[in-house]
Image (cartoon, rainbow, N blue to C red; front, top):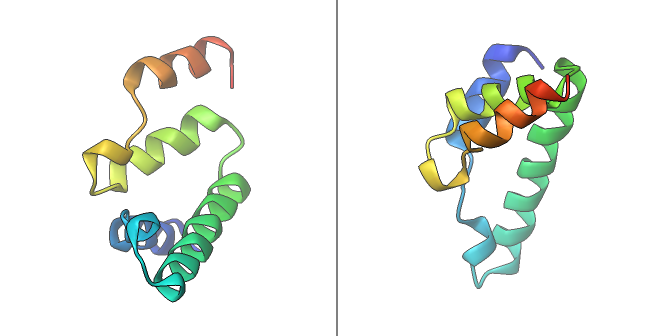
Length: 78
């Protein structure tokens, strides 16, 4: 997976899959979420970089990492 493909996957992710009454929707959303985070782990060494990339492409403000959390990771060199 390329960074462009990962960015598209984050942008198109169903951020509300966990609220579905349909188990198929929940399962599909969970698998997609896990695939995204697996790709983030592979592409970025530092958690702060993964969080920043996520925030850049995440379309749901409530699902973004706080800048305070990212700054803490940076201070820890993570």
